[in-house]
Image 1 (cartoon, helix red, strand yellow):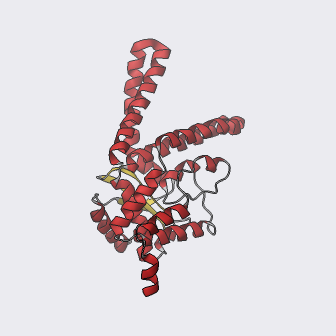
Image 2: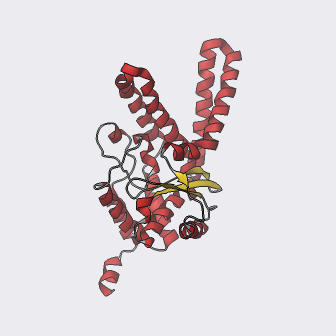
Image 3: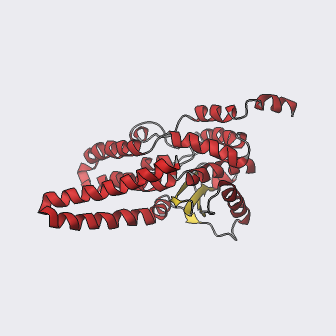
Length: 274
């Protein structure tokens, strides 16, 4: 999984550079093509470097100083050590239902954001969700999904420049952005992150319980953001209708919970014994 994510990221980078070069060639031959290739390379590298900060800014997340919540920082550091990644920068989103997301450039440079609603969950469930996000970092999912989400969101937002043409542009750009995401991002990355999170927490049940609670909370708390950001969250936080339905990349929560419970098939007997 990590190897394929890194390979896809490289293919994505060189594909974007090649597309820039192709347009340059059409406009002015080889000389302009090389200029466009250089510009495309700079744009791709810049996107890779700042994508996580751009996504956090887009979602209104602020970095959480260690002095503001030392317990959360300690928890993330402990789980990051178990996951074999460098402790990520921690961001907090003031509003919204219990959710978390991760972004970054890999195991040595990443960011994790949580909503205040998530921090109100039982500590074991918070750890399960954070472990899931750290699993995305360990598997290098963030290397690919962070720039892909940012570019897809930019495509959707670009429809606003059309004025009275905004809706027709959205009808064109929305499916293009969604198809681009589905082409690059596989739903299997969520199942793989769930399994690794269970290993990090030494139990699958904290994450399974958290997934159920997160899904229930989404029915009670309003959530709004660009639907292109759907792959970043622990579960799909959007109503699966209209434009948001095009971007769904998460397997159903019930399926994920079932797979997690199967990692400990004797959990019902243990529960009765307790």
